[in-house]
Length: 380
Image (tube, rainbow, N blue to C red):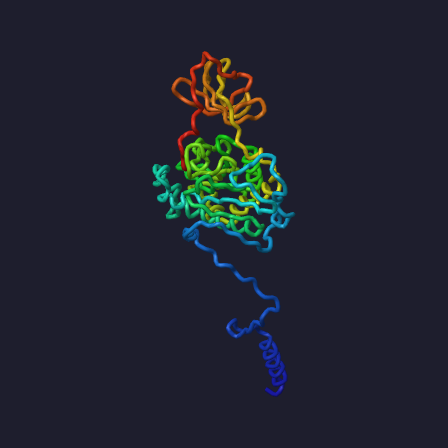
């Protein structure tokens, strides 16, 4: 026993030393606070929670620090001289900031005036308890905030447009719906397209897809978009003024999960895609070029031979119909050697592109006919 005592003592000392370095239970560990503050998490709003409709659309005028790279670019050009053509019912005094109307598609459609009573029940697309108007508003208010930051005057408009609405740009914001799984965005101008409207379309088209990552719904532009009621100043009082540059944006398909991941879950992306395009347009335009605001006016023409009406201004584009010689042609626009037109074939009308050199002016032998007003008002 006496010989074993030193060995036992050494073993006991070794056991005590090892035990002192064993990890403590998690409940006893005290974590010291970090010197670097942790990031604050922003609560994520459920996709079904959308802002409630604004009580009264009103012009918003405010100037705050810029929030995007485009906003931080040089200041938007403003009128400085007498325009080449008096462009609007209310010519802009020098130094006037640009004014943009953002229409929230289908918002309060039931309040549309009597001239548009047939559209009062048009509620737009719908998915899982979310209405198109809610999606459109969530995007529109964010577009407004970006534009206001850049010093732009903004009108948030419901379905009802003020009579002869006069602004430097008008953008109708919509979302699409389909039972066939379609997806993507698209943009259209009115039937009679001014150079300014085309420039506005090109600017927003250049930024929207790039920022949102959504695909373009190529060949998806419909007659309903081109014939949008708010564009139809010839037929309706509650529409844009003739010289207001205008587009309608279908931001994506509410019925498509991939599109909803942007237009519902991340409306700020869709808003930025639209807003930065508008800002690019306002920076590139010449506010003194009144002629650019004037939609073209064309005389009635007739086909000089059998004509193939095509879906695009190209000989390889899909043929819509073959029109016989002496068919009446109501031209909307021209692109190089091609007319975009409504062509009457028998009792039917077709909208497409025909070669300009296959038309002729009317003569005394032709049956008189006044150009049609734009196709019946629609609310896509």
